[in-house]
Length: 505
Image (cartoon, rainbow, N blue to C red; front, side, top):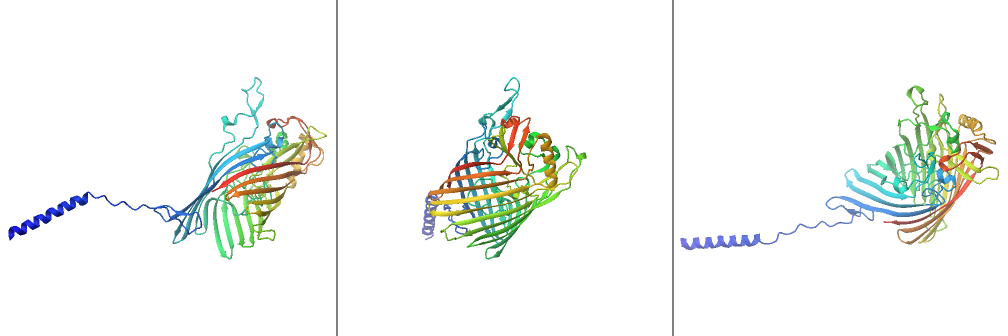
């Protein structure tokens, strides 16, 4: 009996060993694959990053532009070789651009944490300017138009338009300014240089807090970096020169380092009928020194300000989706909130004349002016713009738009500039550096399929200057092939157009 028991136990042990060996030869079950899942918490297009509770949405656009009668993508004609209106001026300018958006959101016990970034790159036809090149000729004469492919002109490195974190009402990083209307300075399309509104379309470094009061009412306060977009010039008129004034410049801008961010506030009502917004900004003008060294002294800082109102009306009787957008702004010592950063800071626009070599319209922009030993004097501006968009069908839309802006120098600045102009350029007639600028235009957009649009935009822009009579320039503007001669001072205007193809994704 004992022998039989031992035999049974041995057999069982052997069977278990054989079974274990066979089990070891079976394939191991694969780990479950984590498939990408749709995230429906924040709208269409979001999905979960595998292995996390963070949702992400990718998007962007690809754009191709051809701009006619301008040396930039679609801006004003009045500066540089564009204003020269000669063989240095581009009859057309092209641009290709690719932009990519990343939007991530994570739900936390403190609310949603959001990060957003827009990164893009583009290539634009370069300007042509004079290049003093002593090696080019035996006598070192001025040459024009170096090869842009050799010197890198026209190419643009990858840029960051937006890059911010949003958490508990705070926006930290690079984002649109709270001073802007949602449509920036484009009420219904239009060029990059419309006045009457601020424009921070390429982003603004900031720290902002926004509170929601319900029923579409929000309030925001913000500290924003003023260096890139919200400072024009703090101009020392004591450094004015004949060549500078002939090109629209009234001296040298003598910025100091940063001392204070721009302080902004905004109240907005956003409801089904449309949107209304009021924004204010305070801007510190900080000069370095009167001269090249510390012992030359400096003027005290001078704070400027800007006030802007915006209104958008939707669901108007002309048709579904039609809108009217309007903006108005006033500035005192903060001109960039009206003549926004895409508007050239000075310019000379040339044309034909029956009494002189050519006609000329001048303008220059500043926040403040001063002369050596004096304090800063603020420059005042105001302007407005508006536009109406009508949808003919789901595939066709047209719009009309217009803008108007004024810039006024202080009394001391006018006296200083005009005394120099009469003495050094033999100016006859009325003398005033003040000017107005206005634009009127229209846009038609064809959208044959969703997210693919073809646009034609045409505008006329006029510089309405306050000078009259003639000036005599001995040295001319060699950088733009303008000789020393007598020039008639009168208003100048130009037509320009944009043709665009854009695919959003």
